[in-house]
Length: 120
Image 1 (cartoon, rainbow, N blue to C red):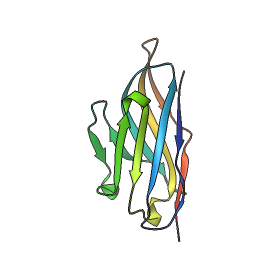
Image 2 (image 1 turned 90 degrees about the horizontal axis):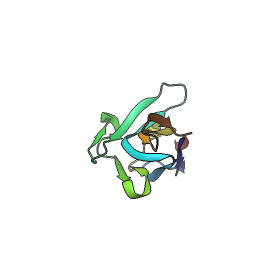
Image 3 (image 1 turned 180 degrees about the horizontal axis):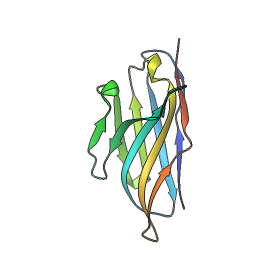
Image 4 (image 1 turned 180 degrees about the vertical axis):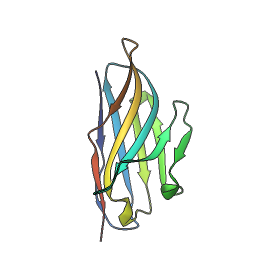
C-alpha cells in the first residue's frame, strides 16, 4: 500500500503565501508524475499543477506565475508553493501520485486533502 499525506493548508490573507507538502509512504518503489488538484466549494475538482519524474512542471493558466510545484525524490515529497494568493484560490487541495509499488504494481493514489482559505 502507498499513502499520501498533505499538510500546510490554512487561512491566509489575500496576497499572502502558503507552502503545501505531500509525503508518500508505504510500499513505494518509484514515483512517476505527481499532481496537485483543488476543489473550490460547490465546484468540481480541477488540476492545478503537475510535475514529471524528471522535474518538468505544468500549470493551469490561472496559477501560472504565482504557484510553483517541486519535488524532492529523496524525501518522496512534492510541494506546492503558492504566492500572491487570491480569494478564488480557496479550495481543498489534493495531491495525487503515480507509483510503482515494491511489487512492481502500478497505482494512482490520492491524498486526503488540505483546506486553503484565502480571506481577509
